[in-house]
Length: 160
Image 1 (cartoon, helix red, strand yellow):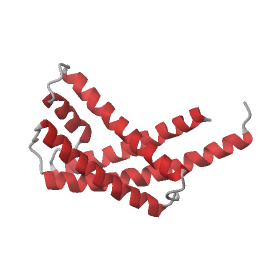
Image 2: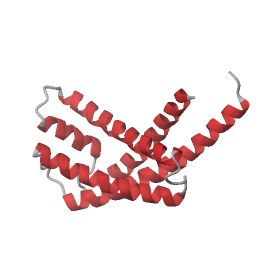
Image 3: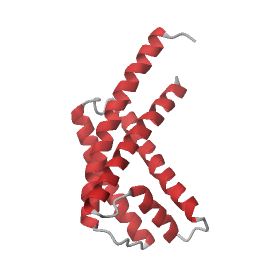
């Protein structure tokens, strides 16, 4: 059963992180600004003077972005399993707001720690990041609910 839960959390995190990333890329294109988290993470890795190739930094930027998404979904899972919040549209919104604030604080910290000042509109970036996390949480909640239903049905009707 643990394997199914890990698979569920992986699928949910991939879907939610992809939706968030799509939103960030759309906002980046729309406002002609660099609001792409994986690209910014690659720049941060570059500022850390890690002896990695350019392609490796880009790959790690994407990988870190999806790992962080998985960690957020894992946190949501714990909140839902422990009945701290119900799986609902309201909790999705609340988790999105909290995640957005965590995301903004994290990026402020990352930029300060690495002394990385990319040529971006920081206010615009943080606003879009906040809404990107709301989208992340809504998609994560919807996918979690769907996959949970599928797991329950599979457990009830499939014997191995």
